[in-house]
Amino acid sequence: MLTIKSEYDTFTTKTFRIPEEFSKRLATLAENHNTSMNKVVIQCLEFALKNIDEEEFAEGAEK
Picture 1 (tube, one colour):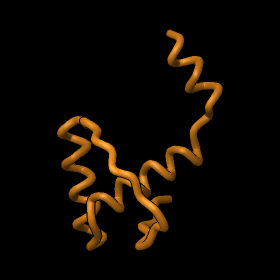
Picture 2 (cartoon, rainbow, N blue to C red):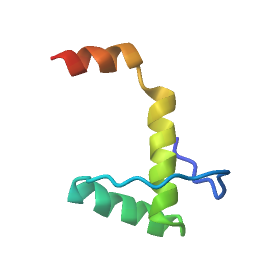
Picture 3 (cartoon, rainbow, N blue to C red):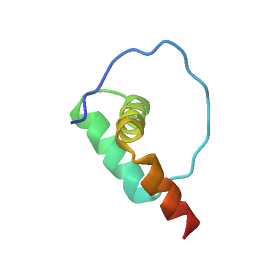
Picture 4 (tube, rainbow, N blue to C red):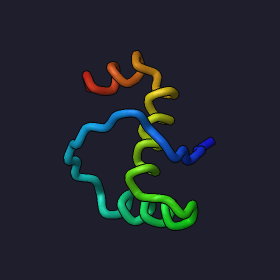
């Protein structure tokens, strides 16, 4: 379940290119939750990192 948090301790700046479809969906999510797209991206990344199967991910990278 995605839960939008409002605060984080430290930040770093990175630049990523993402598909336009993702950008639109993230913007909609941010608007629906009355928050910034940056906060939504952070929450999505946090969720993915907590739920990723690292062994399965590594096997996929080898293909």
